Image (cartoon, rainbow, N blue to C red; front, side, top):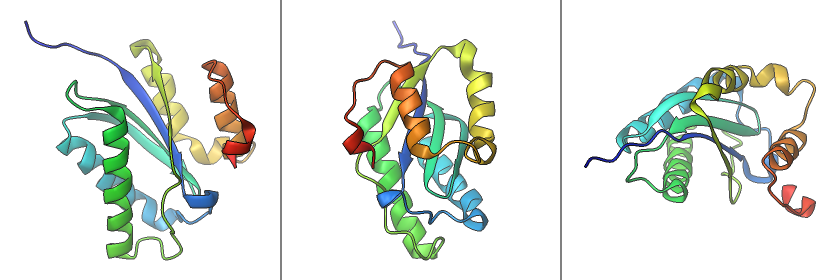
Length: 148
């Protein structure tokens, strides 16, 4: 029997110290680069979006790919790419850790639209508020001191 999966992930991580270093002019290049990393890992990318201090990635992971390894690879290789291309001159790296949430396939369109509209969402809500909302919605216990 073959392996069949359909697990839709939203992966979220921020810049180190939530610094606003991901300036608009370089974001599309960063998204294209991350898209290539995911493709090389046989993952299906649905959407990448973000603002100056964090990213959202909506993807399906290939069954042979571990989530933690994928995030590590994305963060390490994109950091190197950012520095080599001087894409964001003030970028100091990614935060330690990440958040990941799974969704039903029926939620895909709504999730993609949400990630596409990050600029609009963050005019009214900070990254910390957004992350706390997700953690509460998914009933994940957290200590607010780690959400700096």
